[in-house]
Image (cartoon, rainbow, N blue to C red; front, side, top):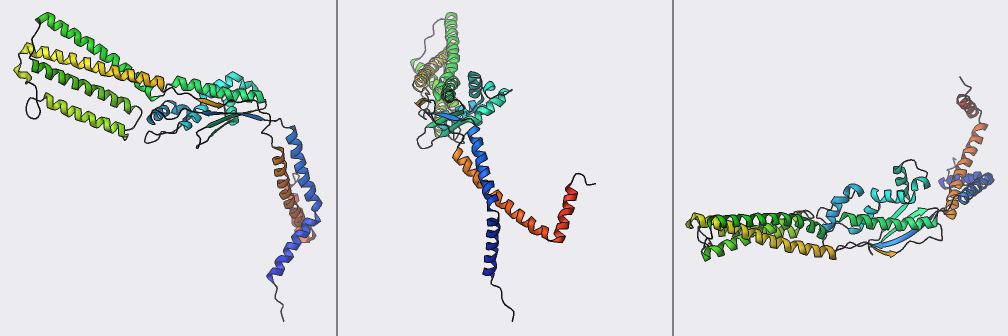
Length: 399
């Protein structure tokens, strides 16, 4: 009667065979594992220690407007490669992390500490790349604090380089002038200059007309109507300037822009009703009923009133932007100044030795099984012949 083989017994025998192979060459495993750990330990003691000083900063928060951050992205996007958000909203910390890694900041650090000599680099871009590898920037999303550290073999130089990164960040941030208030102030400054020139021309035109024709007495109703139309036109022009400024730092989906555009449309409709000579609300006398000289005089008065009102409105906006700019200073606050570290961060000898020991152990096991297979295969005449043929072909002397 044929005896059945228990699969469990077969597996148990196989496991025992494996343990026998390992026990047979236990010294090889021990020597290989210990040798690998000893070799890495010697290398780790030879390796120079690496230190990293750390500083913590608090960037300016989004106090003015989230849209101003989109303006910053547009100006420094080429340097740091950050995408703009679809709604004009961007985390301030991400922008300052990008600024710390941009080329102008890295180049200034390279020149300041002569890192091309320190890193033994022939080209500036290689020194910049090596510096970027040693730079560590961590952004804590919960607290909003950014930690900056630079690795170096000299603990003092590590601290000096870390603090230098913050100094250069402040300098480049100050030079960019990226706040919303600064953008509005520059825009209104240009518009105010043009409005002042237009006002001067309107005054000269009125003066020339009066010198040429003499004083013209205007109807009080017409004068009030012209003054009202001129003021409304000036308000429309000022609102158009405001909308153009808002479009420089926000998209058309922004609620503030939509509200301003809706107000602008309402003001234009009101102006159309005032200037219309028939139908609807029309409190003025039709201009066609006024004599030609008076009509010309009223046209000049209207232009003069318009430019005066526009200049006053732009001047108020300009002064408000200047005050906002002074109040909205983007200051990077240093929470912890970097100091020379006392402990090294590299090499981590215990971790390296442990990894080397584990790696050596597994490699030795593979080597043990390979040697066992080769030993058993060499006892077989056919396999021995195959090994001899393989050696012959692998030999450089073989033809």
